[in-house]
Each structure stands twice: as C-alpha cells, then as structure tokens.
Length: 181
Image 1: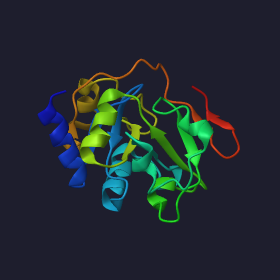
Image 2: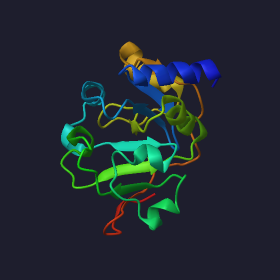
Image 3: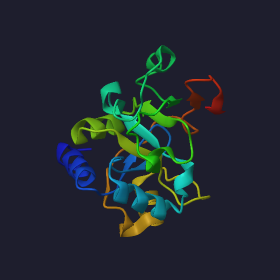
Image 4: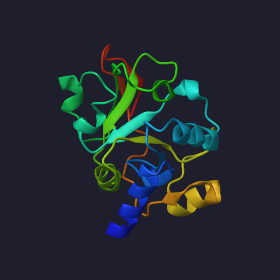
C-alpha cells in the first residue's frame, strides 16, 4: 500500500464513497458512519438489513468517542487489537449504525492498513465483511473485485491479518460473548 493509495482511499471515504480494505481476517467494506446515504448504499450492496447493525473500527479511542458513550477498562486493555466490543452508544450515534440494538459495536483495530486508513481519513470507519449476505468473505483484492466489480468506489491494496475467523464480539456491559473468536 503506497501513500497515494492510502490518500485516495481516505478521500473516497471523506467524499461519501465505499472502500474495500484489508482487516484482521478478511477484506472489509467501509464508509463514513456519519453519512447515512453511504451506509444505506453499503447495506444494499451487501444485501444486508439495516436492523442488523454495523461495526465501527478506528485507529484511536478518540475516533470512536462520537459513537460510544463510555469505554470500560476491559475493552481498553484489548485495544488496539482484534476485539470488538458492544458498548453504550452516545445519544447522537446513528440508528443506521446501531440497527435494532441497544449497543454499538466498536473496535480500535491493530491491523496496520485498516488503522492507517482511519488515521488518514480522520474518522472511525464502518467495517463489515466484503461479501454479499450468505456468501464467504473476500480474502483478497481479486475476490472483492469478483464479488462487487465496479460497485465499490475503491479497493485499498493490502494483505489481511492472520485471524481465521472474524473478531470476537463481547458485550461490554454484561460480559456476554456474542461471537466467539
């Protein structure tokens, strides 16, 4: 991933576009979580119901602060890292991100390219697997291209991390493991 590729991906996000990028276990699809039309477009591409909710990734806790009201120590000690937490949303957290849930799913990623994208864009980014509903997650640039063709505005080149499965999801309030790692 070159500096110009990273700058182009960040610019696409800032302009309301959708970017595919490598994450801990697969390529993800991302957009600006504050941009309702971008999120709705992403959900249409994935054939995913808005009620499901979406994960946000960030390079820092500060990038998540517009969305999550508190950050318990048990979450902070796992970040940056491949751990997604369900936390209390802020009053202004968009319903198109939380879906029909009382919590918001957030992660400070340790994947170098995903974190660099968040830093360059200056924001938390939606992070959902690059696939259509019910299909396997894309593991490479070529798989993203085969699945979505030119429906995605930009694919950030790079390598996925070493996780075999998606990141675990834990409820930060109850401690319940929602998705094991």
